[in-house]
Length: 417
Image (cartoon, rainbow, N blue to C red; front, side, top):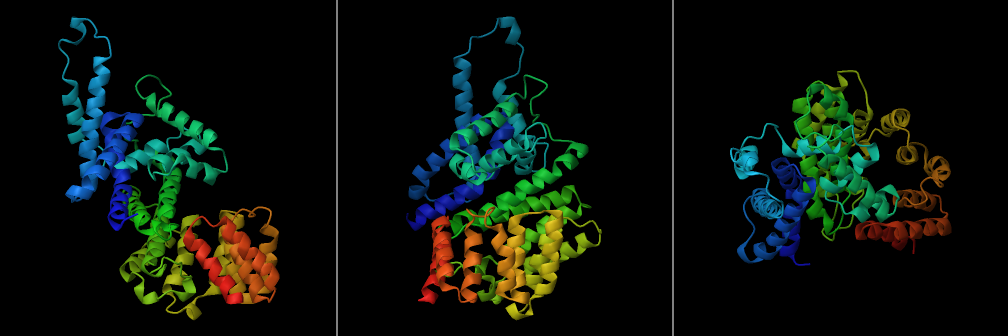
């Protein structure tokens, strides 16, 4: 892939949420909005390399997608039998109504509005998450299926059902409304929407290698959505914690990979490259959240990130406090992954043997998890159990989802020879 193709791919990925959300608001038809957006992307791939990309990629895609969708609406109208003359002779022009909707948007942010639609309580939770990942993040059905450990066919059916439920907006009481939710509904959906925003962020944050540049805008989009949620829910400490967490994590982005795209561990990062303004904003938000004295998982995770951010050197990191925070997180949000992360803190405090004692019981639940085998291999290597460490590293490589992950583990193997 050429640099120009990568740049265009990055622009299209970054513009997707805003463009698709606007098209959905205009036409109130999710399938139509998706088809129009995809056609606009195809036209961008044909014309941008020759003519150069536009200054505002999202606006270009919205404009082209709107015209594509209008053409589709016209074709559908021609294929539909006309009603009697008296039924429509005094009605307004349909395209005028569409134009008025485009110009008179009554919701502050199309993307957030799209998230509220995807996270409507009328949809089962698994459909909410799958739909938001497909529509907002732009993940393929196969990617989402792998994340949920189900077949592509099952995931396709899940997403199709969710979209069909949304499509019943005009025809039944059980349809998902497109109107902006009121204050009570917004509060009820806040937890699910916050989870979706963090999933969008993680999709960008977990990218590595060639995908880093293309997916990084998702982190920025998620942070933007977090800030918007803060304006809507100014006294909600968990939204403060969520936004602080994303800011503190994304602040390390310039130091997370070397020029070859290989991941750099936190202890080895050049901390002078961290974004100090972003860290300051995150720390201020976290301090404000903690004054509410209503702790939650996002606040605890942000507090862990803050301890790393405040440490001028790796040796200054307060691992004892990080251990306590992970212990709190195990109570608030029990997960083998949380325990795995806590084991890393334990290795800093009490050594690799104590950490390995925490890690080993997680094997059954995390057998297919790349980071489990990477952490376990590193602990075994520190204990001098070279053969077992090598086996753990080889398993981690087989489970790596990116070249950067595999390269990182191979560097451990190389260090053992």
